[in-house]
Length: 144
Image (tube, helix red, strand yellow):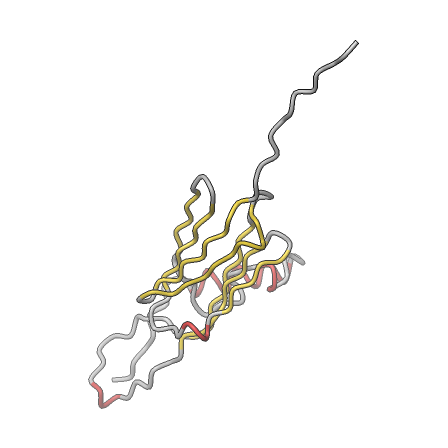
């Protein structure tokens, strides 16, 4: 019995890529899914002084994760190496995804590109982006 990787969304992804190519849509650089073999799940949270993005990327070495911020876009990319699965290992099902991943997030103008910290802990990448200080309106007294 040969192993077949279960990918329930692969036909939809293929159709979307073909439609984008045919219709002259976005390039693959603009699409986080089109350039990925798999897409990690993320949580995004806003606090009073920062934005926090947590991504589930178990099995990825922190040294293999690249985090960039440029022009208000935060990019997270990396790769999870494929394990060797041989017929003799008695695998009945293989569902875990392997290969490269790529996610992009548009951040608001209040995000401070100089205050970005990324840390990995037990397969969860946490990226904290500080907020810029808001300019407080100042009342100007009119003299006469």
